[in-house]
Length: 361
Ligand code: EPS
Image (cartoon, rainbow, N blue to C red; front, top):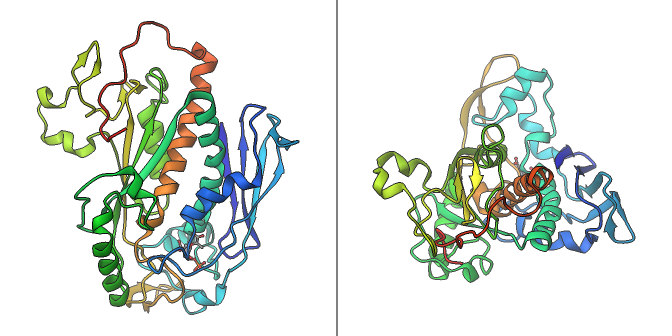
């Protein structure tokens, strides 16, 4: 499976091409509505106020409501760009933003804002992954779900999947939502931004997906998740907590009834164990701030940068569907690769049951 996207935040449209999807999958524009809405700006006062229709047009790869096996091209027209927001920083670099490195690489400053580096691009990742999620669910019963696992220094004090979809933060503990609202209101008022942690869990992945050496499942997940805007860290399973663990604590004991724990995050030797796959990302605080910050202009002169316009004080709030998308795309790719080499089922029976997940089923 391969996916590429095109388009700029303030251009006429954004789009993607998904190549390698098997034929016969039912696909209609309505399939995209749910996940695109989950990711969209303007769902709450805690995210960017830009209002995009995010309506998907299927340009190719689908005939009479089913995928044909040819490349699937999806298009979303931008309906609410406002490039004047960037007029005052057209020749400057926002500190902490990709403005500077794009300029160093290409020598072109897009005066309309972030362009390709804008989180607007992630819309198409989510759209592409609607196909992957649907295929994984229908073909293998695999589900991919995520949640906001930390906002600044606030951590969940309880966990319930039902709560996640019932608030605009994707927070797993309903009781804490007012606390998050107050935190975000104060943050917005201050003009500053904050980081976040998002965790994604895939249930139902059979054992055997992932290449053992090059193309390990965890390496592919890490690369895909790190490729999301603003991501500065990726963890699989216990991640960086393994540094302080002893082997007797970390190893997941195996019983005929299944694994007794899941510190590994469902992956051993680059190959899925059959347990929940668990991956987390750390997202940095948004760099587009209205608080002045020192920088330079394209001539190297010192400037104070102030970013106006419509920005998210915490990009992590909208990152849950994006992280799910990257996990789903990698899983579909690995499923197809595994199937090509080994067929649908693993090499040996019986298998032990999945056993313990890191997070309730
Ligand atoms: C973004 C800046 C803002 C956000 C945008 C992400 O864009 P603009 O200034 O062009 O309105 O609104 O998010 C989206 C439009 C979206 O669909 O996610 C940025 O710099 O990343």
